[in-house]
Length: 605
Image (cartoon, rainbow, N blue to C red):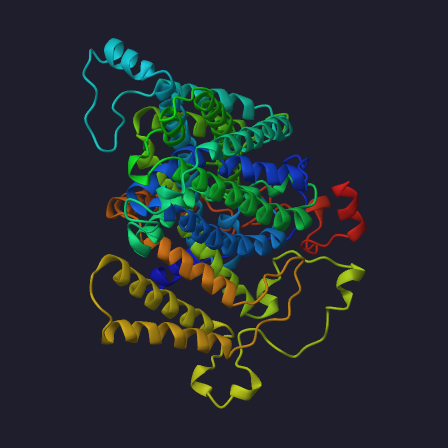
């Protein structure tokens, strides 16, 4: 029994950061504009050229426009939650690190493992999409040559494995793996060129396509909502790929000169830019061609071929080449920084944390490049994209949950987070208060059964009940044809009562550099949106996801649990092995995150 209690305590150990959070072994060189370009380049592009057409034809019709808007709102709620955490802990690792310092090691590892799935799925998936676009442009030349000369005319027959080894996709992975070895500064410069070129191509394409617009395509063939609202929500779940990955901004924050200012701005701008171009692209495509006749493999080139236009076809190909290049570059970049953070904590193999002379995690980059190469060559596009979606949505759901947790517990429980001292702008917000986060509000003290000796415990329980009730209700609504009954009403009432219980408790009085407004309502909306998206993913996607999680838990049990830097050592500081945890200048107990406002401004310049 004692062994089980100790094991349970160990897997929930929280990482305490006892350093200035702007200290890093990586090179801080990225500005707000750089981070926005990283986020935009990673998320904008291949979804516009390929995925919107697929969703319009098979799930939503012209109402794909509303699918994009719904997904954008979900992503915005999630981005706000990430923004607060990113300002509190501007370190490589993103959601993984936020969970580590908030709820414990096992949850952090699961989130980090899911993020690895997301980034790998993105890098390999868009490489596969790149090769498919090139092949379509040249009438299947690459496919025909590969099948004829490498496979003797016998392609593979499988729903999940590619029909032939996609060597072109693998080559693209190799090229950008090599670019990353030269460091973040070189990658950032290339990224700006790619994003600028992509925006120019998109604007030309949108303007050119309007000359072929036909409003009857929105009224014929079943009208604007041929699949109903269910199709709109199903499409929204698939279109999350348009926004999935904005957390690469947080993953890159350890190389940003002023993460406190840059992270929130870059996150919001990325979502807005993607939403605008996504909606415009959907409008143009569904006005050009009836939704039922959209070419799923190459929507825009297929649409222009109907009008015997060749220039736009090559323009689309150019745009896809640019955007895929940026997406792969930033997916591999974010993945390398994530694995660097996890391995620095001892939860993945320690050789992955080593840095080269130009402060680049070389071994990590080479390892993920090799793995992504294998997936890009042998798995098909849609299998990889579904892996990306579920990894992203689960991470966003957990981060929204964690934001409520840290707001409804005592301030001292959050003392590992970032604080700005001696900043005149925030002095007037710092007031002495006897309010303890997570305790019942004074006017509700009579409800003693909702109080607890541990502040915040009842809030956590209520939050778990809310997610369970809401998740079950949404799943039943979208996956069964049952009409509302007693069970549905009970779940809805349980979810509403859980939120009411949370509202009866005090929030703490912290004033971080960026604070999400209207908590718990915005995180709750984010949770609901993400549950909607998860409920619309296929059963096979869930099975693959669960297999991936089981593999990760086995790695944690056999390696990470025994090698965590949080394991106490007899002679050394238990945190001394992690470059992110070493105290600067030999200080034993430095104040975490203390930094003069003048220093922040100087770094931003």
